[in-house]
Image 1 (tube, helix red, strand yellow):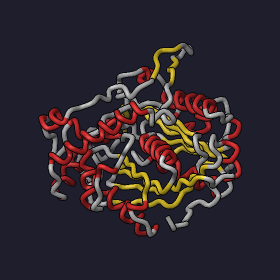
Image 2 (cartoon, helix red, strand yellow; image 1 turned 120 degrees about the vertical axis):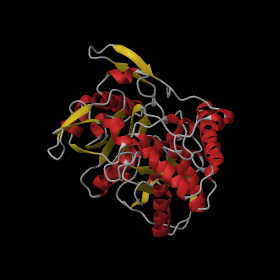
Image 3 (tube, one colour; image 1 turned 180 degrees about the vertical axis):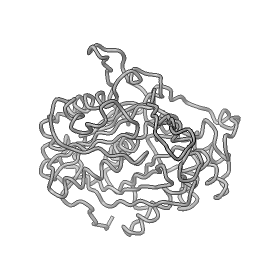
Image 4 (cartoon, one colour; image 1 turned 30 degrees about the vertical axis):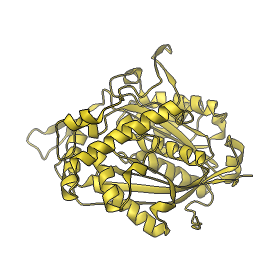
Length: 403
């Protein structure tokens, strides 16, 4: 590893100052009953307490979600208040890229000197997502009703196609074989369940109690409810919904939150549970591909980023992605001549679900934990987002960097 590029010289991620809820499938847990923003703010406070980080250490908050929630107008200032700490901040969203974008924005805030410790809080609830009524004078109805989750996934206003159609289109374009896609999904499920059993995710996932409006417990989220092991025979037998896409080779809607801190190198020494570990931002890019070809965007984005950074996939110690369709991984392997079995060693959203806002935050946390367990190195995190967009970031984990 000879590349010494550093996107944010003044910002690092303090090891261990992170955590994610489990992601229960929509309508399967007590998260379906609460204001997800308030829950996420309170959960962040709880998680940081478990990491021995006082809320008063955080001086700015970047939050991210994609589905409207009650009091969303008040954004990050409201969310920080739910954790008992009044600070400023801003809210952002970019579909499934939200989690990674929020981490990058936090790095920028710290690097430019406007914050010493910036919190990142991402969340979404697909359960009972709101329905909006929009005045629309260009239509004969004069109003249009939009179910925020289901209608957006079913219709891209720029192309008229659904998300699943983009997977089918991309599979046909790249001549992806259905059996390969089934094999990918089977392996991804095995990686996830093996990691749970080994304890590899113990420093990432935090069981959380859910409180009702009276402040009384109404449930506990302590597993990715709805995520089940699946056999290769079952995958082979499933009906195609579009080319190479079945219910077993795509992700599912879910609820959840994930949080992480970004800090100056000096503050990171104080906050990290292992201050000898240095986590730096190396580079980031995005790429928008052809209409209704979303699953190929991540591969093209990674190709662009690696070229800019003068790095190769062989330089990465961990490679992890947001893959709503197993087709994504098949195309990535084909375009970059890479063995997809080397992706997502500790699990991925294809298996544990898709609450959008926190999805890539959890992916990033899992990737960084895995890199630490392997002794450090370059970490590649990437994924796709609505609008046929890909996003990719490289981090560098070093041992002995913070003394």
